[in-house]
Length: 297
Image (cartoon, rainbow, N blue to C red; front, side, top):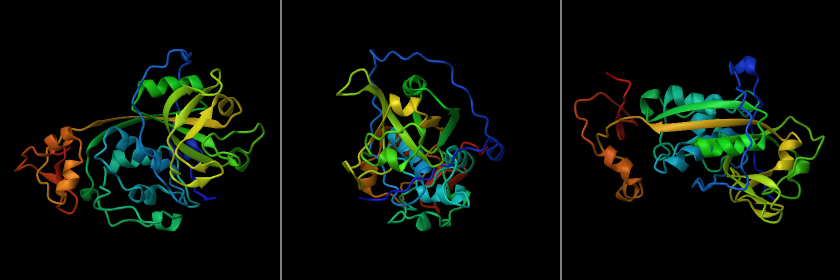
């Protein structure tokens, strides 16, 4: 059985300057769950403590498949002295510094804590201001609040308490026994609210995994299911709500991309990238991938 990392550090509001909001009470209609296409392929964080950054990577790539960001670039800048990071730190880093490209700065293999902690030689001038990102962090959400947030927002991450006892028998449908220790956090990106296939009265939230393909007690991990009992036993302690939109920009060169990579991009993104922006001030990845920065006049 593999031993994947975790790494979500519960927020210290004084240290982060974070003011967690309280979500309005919600009564979700579990008998009429609307369809929403939120599925995506997970990631594998290896033995690193990068779960909080993996969630943001998965969320961005799920909405914009062409935007694949390197986890190590973010994590190495936000990690805490003992390893791991706060949930809001990756989004705040991207808001301030922009996105690097995994094509230019691929993540190391294997993704060990030591490898992912190495600062990459990337300057802000090498990053791209492509996304307008906003977020809210909610303490101790109910399963109904999470279910409604999934339908209302681009991405919703869960902050859960990880326990050996809860994951001992199953990674894909873990439990949180009453009285479990509340000291080791793990971050998950939600997919959809659903009813259990074997017990239609059991409400649950399906999530993507940053342990994708790792071998657990129930086989290769492809997802996690966090059910009603996990919530009411105190296993879910936070919810990160993220919304994102592409900023207006113009592309000046396709140098650095192969024809195959261009062909695999979102057609709308390619069309925007082909726009002529000669004479504009640009930022780029070592001069190979240049975009107009909308913040420049």
